[in-house]
Length: 468
Ligand SMILES: [Fe+2]
Image (cartoon, rainbow, N blue to C red; front, top):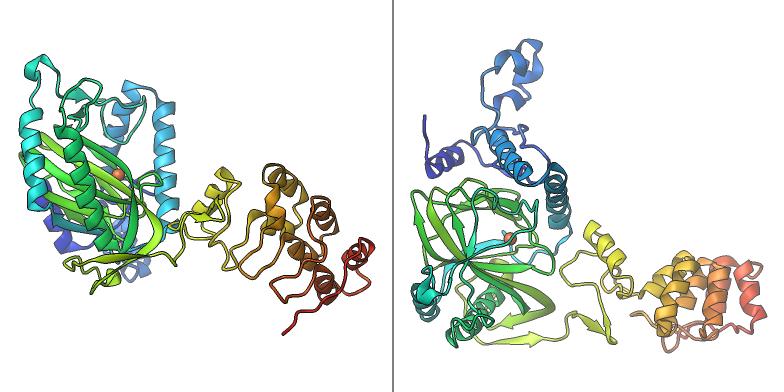
C-alpha cells in the first residue's frame, strides 16, 4: 500500500504522538521501537508469559512510520559508498552526541520552541523578485546556481545522491546581483531579527544568513540541532516544485514531533539550538528553495509594550526597549558564559574546556571567575596556567565581593593560598566593603590550629570580622 508522507503522518498523528528517534535516528544510533502505544510495549499485555511480544505481536509493526531503520541504513550506505565508513560514522557520531547533549543544556526562550508565520509582504515581494531574476541557470552566461560544496562524509544532507545548489544573495566576487543582493540581505536581517526578537523576547545579534539553498529530488535533511552560537533561527521558503509536501519535522520542547509544511512566503522561527529539526523523508518533486537566518541572544531581554514572551504571543507588536540590567556577554571586559547555556550542564562543561579564560558567569549565582573556582577547589596547577595569562584575576571579585584568596582560605588549601599571595593577592583584603578577611575565614572554618590559619598568620594576615 502506498501512502503519501502527508497521509502517513496524518495516519500516525491519529494513531499516536511520537517523539525522537521515530522518523530517523536522532539521539541514538537506531530508530526506537520502545513506544508505549505499541502493543508489544503494553505492560499489561506483557504481564502473562503467553502474551510475550515475540509470540503475540510477531507480525505487528514496531516502526509506526514504516521501515525507517532501513531508510536510514540506505542513507548511510550512500555516504559510505561515496566516501568511506570512518568519515561518515564520525559525522553521525558527532550529530547524535550533539543531539543528545545540546537540547538538555540549553536555556529555552519559548514554550514549544518553534512558530510558523509569514514573511512580511514588502520583504516577500523583494525575495520573490530576487528569485525570479536570479535563480535561472546560465543567465547572461554566468552560472547563477552553483553546486553546494559539502565536506567528505558530512551527513547533514544526502548530497552524495541529491546535490544541493545555491543562489547566493550576496555574490560580490563574481560581480553578480549588483546592489540588489546587499539590499535584500539587509532587509532580511532587519525583518527576521525583529520577528524573532518579538517571538522570544530576547535581544539578538546577527550570526549567519545562508542561501538561497535549493534542495533537489530525494533530499533528506538529517535531524540535528544547530551548532552554537546559532541559537535562534528562521527558515523562509522561497520557491518549490513538489509532488507532495516536504514537511520539516521539529521535536519541540515538549519532546513531541510536529511536522510543518511550508508554501512560498512561509517562515518558521525556531530555537535551533534546542529543537531537533530535519526533513527525514526524501523530497518528492523537483526542488525546494530556502533562506536560513541564524541569531545569537545577547542575554539582554527585550520588554515589549504589551508583549509576553512566555505566552508566545507572536501577534503582539510595539516599540521595545532593551533591558541592560539582565546579563550580557561582557563583564569587566571578559567574555562570560553565553546566556543560553545552562550552568553546570554537559554543554557548559565542554564550553569551559574550550574557553578556559571564560568567566563563570551563571555557573553559580555568585558570578565567580575561574580563579575563584580553582582556588576553592585547591587546583593550584590550573591557577598557575590561568594567572600566567590573566594575572588580574587574582584581584577579581565575585558578586559578594569575595577574592580567590577567600575561597582558598575557606577551603583550607594552603598551597593555593600561598601561590595567590605570591602572585600579589592582598592578604588582608576583605570580602565586600565590610566583610571579613582570609584569616577570619580560616579561623571560622578550620580553627586556629589549622595549617591554613597558621600559614596566613605567618605572612602577616590579620583577623577582621565582618561588620554587620
Ligand atoms: Fe539547522
